[in-house]
Amino acid sequence: MLETVILICLGMMSVALILTFVRLIKGPDLPDRILAMDTLYINGIAVIMLFGLYLDSNLFFEAALLIAVMGFVSTVAIAKHLMRGNIIE
Image 1 (cartoon, rainbow, N blue to C red):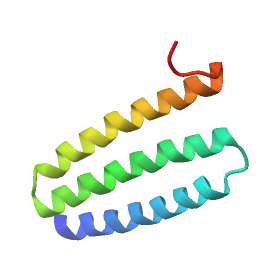
Image 2 (cartoon, rainbow, N blue to C red):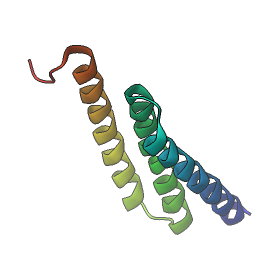
Image 3 (cartoon, helix red, strand yellow):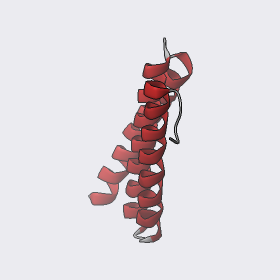
Image 4 (cartoon, rainbow, N blue to C red):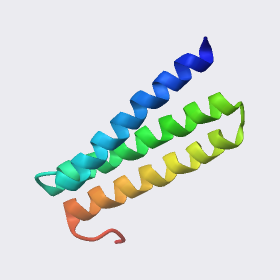
């Protein structure tokens, strides 16, 4: 039962990834694209975690943690660049 639910969730998250990628490409302005990029890495983390549950491997959880940290840092850097024009003061 759990394997079936994980496969269904993987399919739904894959559709969410595709729709978010479309928003990233066709976004009307820069803040929408930044939000789409943030959502894209969060959805990617969810797909990696579901795949790790499906294969019963701990390696995928460590990769998801690394992607979460990198995504947070990049979102903060881009937001700081938009607000002030530079990243490092």
